[in-house]
Length: 214
Picture (cartoon, rainbow, N blue to C red):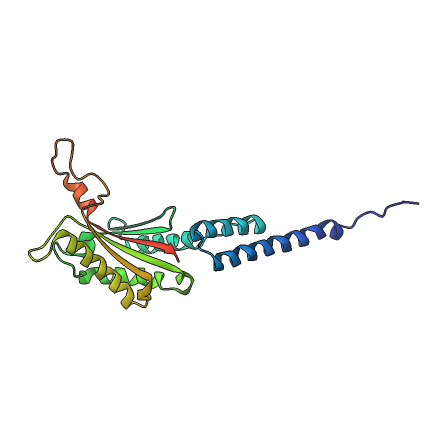
């Protein structure tokens, strides 16, 4: 007579149910901590996404990865790869536009021909799953007009872009506008001899939208 009955497959897998319940409770605990404290939401989203990938054994995109992917699709489908790009970093996602694509020289008024492209980008950013993002819009330029300094022009351009997105339904409270003129160049605009690098100066004239979790 056997002392022990053979275990059924269902008995062997029972521990998985307990384990998954425990992991779910831990995840809820971290969500509760996030609600009550000032934590790094980017890192929290990364942890939550990695846990979901581990538990579900499948690919799960974080909100930052999702918005980056969606914006890349928009840029590719619109054919504006030479005038816009998007990437993610440690803080969130970054969307960049070339200033000549959006504005005429010395102007802070968005070009009419750029409006259809911006409407498509705004439609992506305004969907419900991205409601927890904030947007810091930076203006970078070394240009000036007869009436405006480079700093004023960069700030007005950043404000114009932010106002456009607000007009398309994104809450104004989620925006911050910064004018930086030529104080933070993307690439050096002069060579070792002090001569201007024309191509680099064009690259430095840009609008940057930093997309970060609240």
